[in-house]
Amino acid sequence: MPARAAAQPIAAEELDCRTCGACCANSRPNRQENYIDYVQVLDRDRLRKWPQVLHRFTVVNRAGETHLRLVGRQQRCAALEGVIGSEVSCGIYELRPRACRIVKAGSNECLARRSERRIR
Image: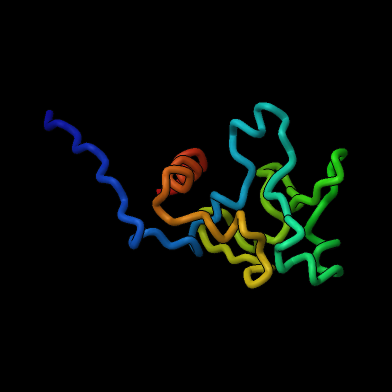
């Protein structure tokens, strides 16, 4: 029986965030800790300048901090459109908080989230 080839790492340029969306869902460690505060929306974030959009996609926690709202069994961002692992887009892409803007395709966080959601 031939030996199985080890999985080759995926180069960042091969990853297409529009077919993933794993980073737009609460991680397993957060879910296990019942941590439901997701990406914090800071005062400097552009989303703050659009109160109707802010109200639609965020919640305020007990500490008075504004966070993107999570929805569904997958605890995914309310602004995420489409199916995780298939075809997704961000409904507030131009207004998304800084924390969303700094996630890089192929980063350790990206690859961990993809693995957790079984996305190649």
